[in-house]
Image (cartoon, rainbow, N blue to C red; front, side, top):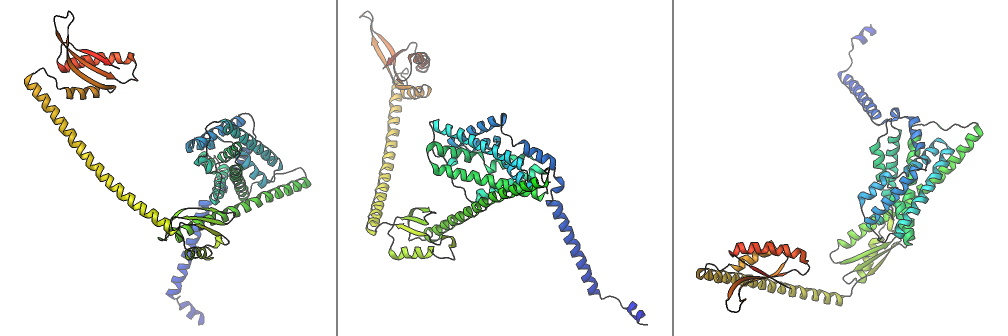
Length: 490
C-alpha cells in the first residue's frame, strides 16, 4: 500500500526546474573549459626534435655567422650615430645573437651541459667581437654625438624586463611550433633589441663614458637573462625530454651543475627585476609629486627640476620666491607615506627667486610687451604707407608711359618689359634702355637703340653669352625694333 502511494506521488515542479538548471550550468562550464583548453593548449602542435635541432643549429659562431654579426654591428652603430630608428631595426633583424641565448635556456631546461658550454662560449665570443667592432667604429668615426637612439639604451626600466621576458616566451612558443612562425621571430628580434645595447656599450668605451657602458651592458644582461628564462619555462611546460648520459652518476653531476648555474642566473634576474621595478616606482611617484603638488599649484612657478635616485634627492628650481611655510608644506607632502610610499627618505632641494627680483623682472617684462606692441603698430602703419607709395609710383609710371604712347606710338612700355625680363632671366641684376646718338664719320648721326644689362657676378661668360642672344631676340620682338645693341655692365 505504501509503495503504491509513493509511486503515485509526483516530484515537485520547482525541484525539477532546479535540477535542470544545475545540469545546464555544469554543461556550460564544461563547454567553456573545453573551449579554453583547445584555445590555449599548444602541446599537441609541438615538434620536440625539430625544435632542439633548430636551437642547436643557431648556437655555433663561425664562418658566415661571424661576418653577419660584424656587419650587423656596423649597421646598428651607423643607425645609432645617425639617430635612425629604421636602420637600427634592420640591424636587429640580421643579428645572430639570439641563437646562443636560447641555447642557454634550453641547456638549463634539458640538463644538457654540453649545449650549455657551447652556448656560453659562443655568446661570450659574440659579445667580445660586438664590443670591439662598435668600439672601433665610434673611436675612429669623426661624427659621433649623443643621440636619442643611444641615450634610450643606457637607462633600462621595468618595461625592458617585461619586453625581454614576454618576447622570449613568444619566441620559444614560435620555435616549438611545427612550421616555425618567422614573423614572430623577427618581431621578437626587434622588440628585445640585443644588438643596439652592445653597440651603445662600445660607444661608451670609445668615448670613455663608463656610465653609458654599464647602463647599456645592464640592458643587454636583462634581455639575455629573461629571454633565457623564458626559453627555460616554455621547454619545461612542454615537458621536453631531459638529456641522457651514459651513467647515473654523470647524469646526476650534470644535473647538479645545471641546477646551480640556473639558480645562479635566476638570482641576479630576480634582483634585477626587483631593483628595476623599485626604481621605476620611484620615478613614477616623483613625476606624480611634481604634477600634483607643484604644477597643479598656480602659486608656484617651476622653471625646471631634477632628481638623484641614489642620493634620494629632488632638486626644484622656482621662478618665484619660496617662503619657509611653502617649503615646509612641500616637504610634508613628500613625506606622506600614503600618497608616496616609495619616496620615504627623499629630500627636497629648493631654489627660488626673491620677491624683489621677481617684481623687477615682471615689471620689465610688462614694459617690454607694451613696447613690442607699439613697435608692431608702427611697423604695420609704415607697411601700409609703403604699399600706398608703391601703388602711386606704379600709377605714375603707367601714366607717363601712356602719355608717351599717345605722342609716339613707337615708345615702349619699359616698366612692363623690365618686369617680364626679370621673370624670364632671374640672373639679371639691372636693366636699362635708351636711344643712343652715334656717328662713325662724324658727319652723319644715327640713333641706335641700346639695352644695358648687368648680370649676376657669379655667372660665367660661357653662360651669359647665350642668355644675351636670347634676351636680344626677345627684346627686339617686344619693342618692335629692327636692331638692338646689348651693352654688358660689370
